[in-house]
Image 1 (cartoon, rainbow, N blue to C red):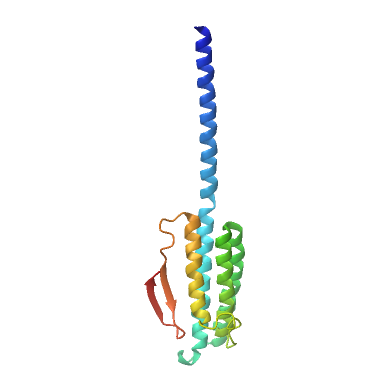
Image 2: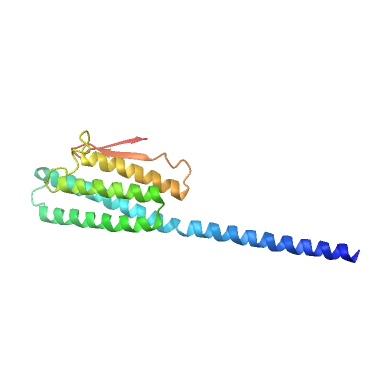
Length: 179
């Protein structure tokens, strides 16, 4: 009888140890997973905002003749270049936090930001041969949509692929929709 009690006590102790260790492992896994969510969300949001700034500033420069008199184009150009540098830095930060599809989507955004900046500065689209059927502005909108989907999937957002779409035509007019 004492042997049975001893065996029972040993089994109970082993179960408690295994159960406790399993709980600790699960807790550590969840903490590790959530630890990176806030920084990824912050960097991804900043990257998208900076890319949108590039888009807006490039449109303003492209349509400079429509701007109110007294608009300082050198300030717009400086702001455009600053926003592009910000995109480049944020892409590198997102690369440290994001899974491969987030990293790839961020690089695609950077690729199209460069083309938007070039066109905004009055130079030809450097990627027109690769994408003959769309403007850099349209390509950047599509890239931002893909980036949002990738980030939402990594963050575990329900219905991650349901992204609100904001696209501009070549004149800078915004149209909305869902994809």
